[in-house]
Length: 96
Image 1 (cartoon, rainbow, N blue to C red):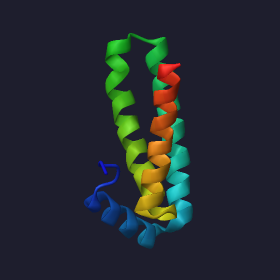
Image 2 (image 1 turned 60 degrees about the vertical axis):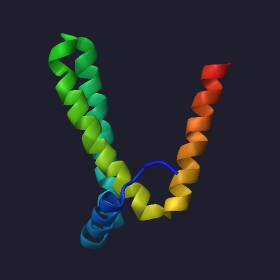
Image 3 (image 1 turned 90 degrees about the vertical axis):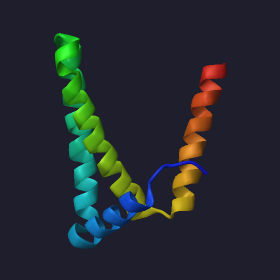
């Protein structure tokens, strides 16, 4: 199967879970989602080129938080199953 969460990211995510706990991971996901929303709204309202870096930065932060969450809740097999089920829905939607 392809890359979703590398071994190194999984190890860091599990270390963060042990150090800060599940509640911290969940709070981080919520905060990062809010920051992505804010950055996208700023991008949509302004000169689009100047704010793209902020959108990318916030998406990267969200990705790290999501990886932490995925490693906190599930086994790698469950992550792959869920990810590929979502990709299958995308493919189906594109083909309709």
